[in-house]
Length: 101
Image (cartoon, rainbow, N blue to C red; front, side, top):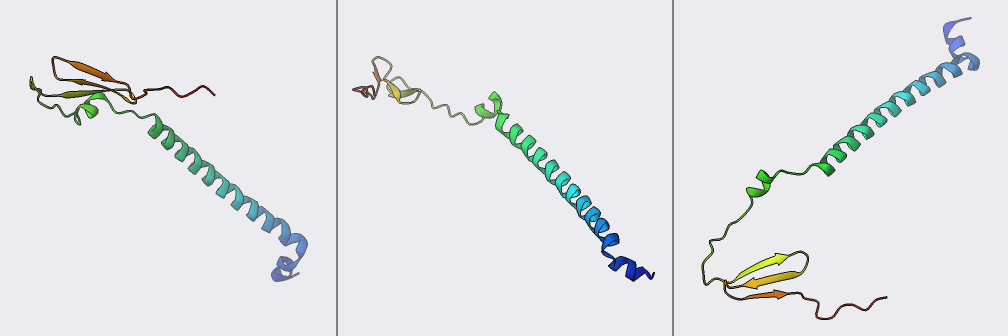
């Protein structure tokens, strides 16, 4: 039987085509899995990376303090302490608290 006739024979070509397709699918799946693992690792590192004190200190602005200057100190989310060196006012912006549900 000639070679081209054997290739056209459905019994002989089907397993070869399926084998090639499965091999290709396995390679693509391995590349995809590797990509997902690398991206997850990079994302985890970026999520957990915290700069040190030196990097924060480089952005700190120290204003020169004078005896007559008014200063404002921020406490948390909304509270502020206003001080002129002699007197201080602590402001909590909730004059009334929200009702309980």
